[in-house]
Image (cartoon, rainbow, N blue to C red; front, top):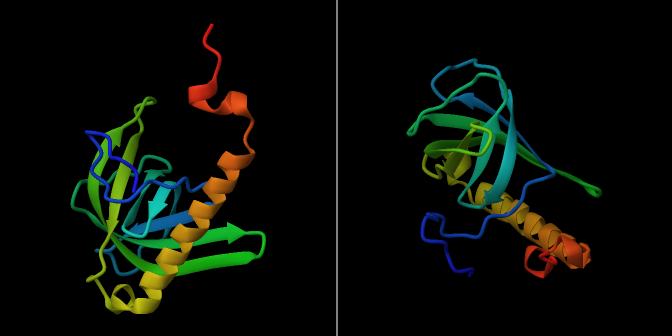
Length: 149
């Protein structure tokens, strides 16, 4: 396990989610349409994302997600993923970054072992993808090895 930064609340290491497609909608409405979002990182416990457009969420809001991981070999997808907004951080450009926690008690889909296994599989694929990316990146791109001067 990676040592946590003092302000870090996550139990698990963040994984970049470059090939992760996320859509969301409020869980309150019966027939709300899914809206696109920009997934930033992912663990089996939750994810963080930016919302497209002028949409806003508040801490405690319950939402439903569609998650798709696109790979060369195919696509892993999950529907009816329940999550709760746990924190909101403003990043450099002033855009809010939403920290979501999966709600494993929200519905029958979330309680199933198959859903937990699929989320764990997505995390594992993203982790292996990140390790490969780090192994093949040029040395000058690694922050600690960059020449200062």
